[in-house]
Length: 454
Figure 1 (cartoon, rainbow, N blue to C red):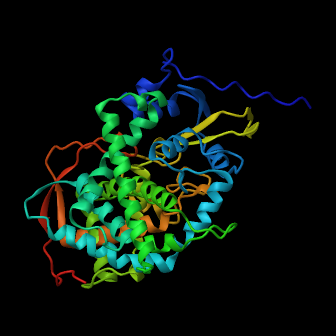
Figure 2 (cartoon, rainbow, N blue to C red):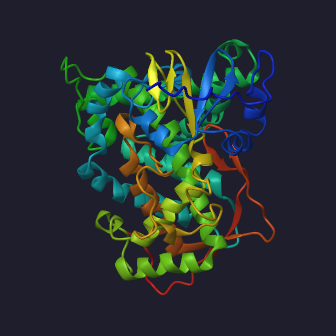
Figure 3 (cartoon, rainbow, N blue to C red):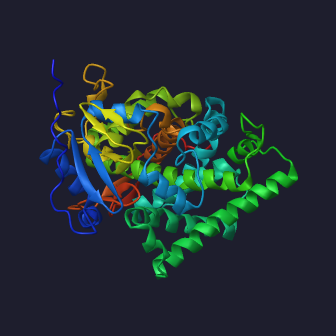
């Protein structure tokens, strides 16, 4: 039988000389990637400077791509490693990734996460206590600060205080904001001595210097502080037995802060937004918290006993996923479905667009936590993989979910955040997909319980 030749991979329209599709990707990346799903088939080629890029749009092919261990992590992660000044478990590929993952896995094991919950909850409580009734809150900025505080206290055990912590927070904010733009631009653009580039470079080196000093001080003291930093200091290479260097630890923490803080903050912002828009769903969350947690502070044992709140977070991760373009690169001739791709092809998919596909999720723009009940839950081959899959699945998925459940459970029992009448909140793609502007008014919860203090 003569083998059937697959159709050629179509090329997306609108490419410009030299720039390719950079302009629509910068102007409105979410609209551009969404348009690809409706205009083209399972694969479509877009033009980016330096290399052909094929956007994968079929669920089966996306799963196959993510589970193919011969693929490199691709341009996005490679650029992130270069921009942040060092490889990490997030940006490394192949054997390097496997080695780093084995080193870091103990820091994200269940016993460690169990110890982190009290720290997370205390940071949320401190944050909410500082809000004033009637205050207009920039929710995303508040959630970025909260997420960073939770991460910093988990990593450093509260050792960064005062001006040092404020400077770290400022530097990380600049780095997180600038990473997305840096990745989209050609590498030569980062070398132009513009104010944006100088500010980014200073902030990146400031973060690395702060983390490096903390590493050196803890290593010199020999103390086991019981925090994540201490665990990383005791991690060793499974092949050589050598400990991580200060530079390697700094790289892991910087990448964790950039990747984890921004994404956690965005999901928390979207959950609070949707609870304000959907009073019945908010009431369901509060009722479950009353039944399971009662008047006491949330503890680690509660995290897995709040299925409705988990569905709310799952639905936020679907409708408002923070992932923009996830990449891989072929290192050898690679079969993907019907197609055989040569080495050196960039592959990418957009989680935000994929999670809104009406063929995968009926009425996709409706926020509906009950779509995750067992009878209607999508199959594993469908369009929901919020933390990725395969060997490169997010190492911090349980950490992130625990932080989000702890934060929402603590916030909503203390205050209600209300949207202003007529406010429209749009998603925008930077390093992650986040709310462009989300301002809400703080109102005290009509509590029937005692103050939620540890």
